Length: 430
Ligand code: ACO
Image (cartoon, rainbow, N blue to C red; front, side):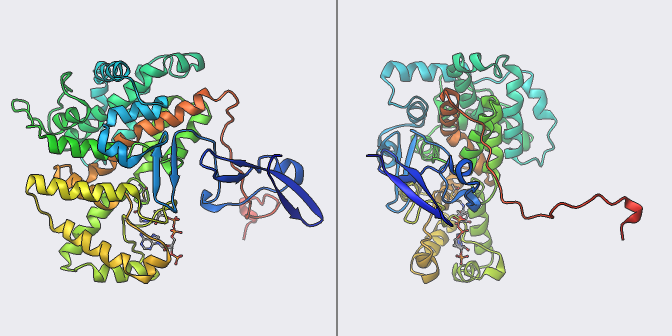
């Protein structure tokens, strides 16, 4: 017998279907509630709303579990690489060696931007934030690929369009950095792998190649991999929302970049490092900042702490913290910000305010410190996040594209404004 839930509204009793996910997570299906009762549900910030069914990523926030297509993030972080994980997320299974080679070749063949795109870069002011450039340029790229908006071609050409987007996001990101520094643009090299190529385009000089170090390449690749998907977060939901109107993949991803930009989401890695720098400049050991972060009148938060879904240690933060220590050991590098971060973490984890609210470090708490050690400037941190998140956005876009009964996303609201009133001409208004 199928499960159901009973809802009583006044004298009316309604039976609502219960559905369960493959990890047995239960949900009450309220999609017919309004039609049968006139009621909608209200869930500010969507904290309790499942917006879709998805096969891509599973999170158990209470237990601190994250799996891509069923594979634990810890295993992928140890054994896989970003490009393989991108395939896994987009296609739903690990690639064969032939598929992986084909995918890597496709990324290489599509890594160059259309030459005319370079003119667009010229128009941005030197101080432009690279996230503004990234979202604009991803959207602008769509102008160069006819057929993106055609429903049938969107399905047929999905492999090539997704490879273009995944490969070119890295090229656009590096170009935007070089533009912001007044440096000449460097093209990707076909012989370099995904993460190597990004480092090359960022840091090589016209006559002197960036010296690749395995440790550095691996650290960057790991950051990309750990950000590759995270189910229905703010930016991914935005991508799905835009995709649901049948907008093209580039437009949907450009919207995802905008949603990711804010400090409560993908901008948090930048905000964490800026917070740590401010604490350092104030000669604070972190205790004053923790006190302020607990005081609601101060308007401060311990950036890199807390998560809507995790009420436990974010498993990505655990992996990144270890990667940070390993990188610093390998490079014989030190950073006072890492010491401050560790002091802050210890203090917060022992503090009743953070314990009661189940606030733990999230992925962004240590990732910025790694990126600093790699020489990536702070304003580029959210861009790194966006490059990493691209496979997840593409995989979510694909779910919408392939859903035969896909409907436009259109939430409702409870209206709290003025009730019906008449227009008053301007000279009769008091
Ligand atoms: N520092 C201090 N207090 C916090 C923090 C924090 N970082 N995070 C949450 N709180 C407090 C809130 O003030 C609130 O307290 P109250 O119950 O006394 O009012 C309580 O914890 C619950 O917080 P909410 O804002 O309701 O939690 P929500 O789930 O809406 O927000 C979020 C989650 C945005 C991540 C929040 O924890 C936050 O702002 N963290 C800092 C920014 C950050 O690190 N963002 C990155 C998230 S991970 C990612 O996007 C990749």
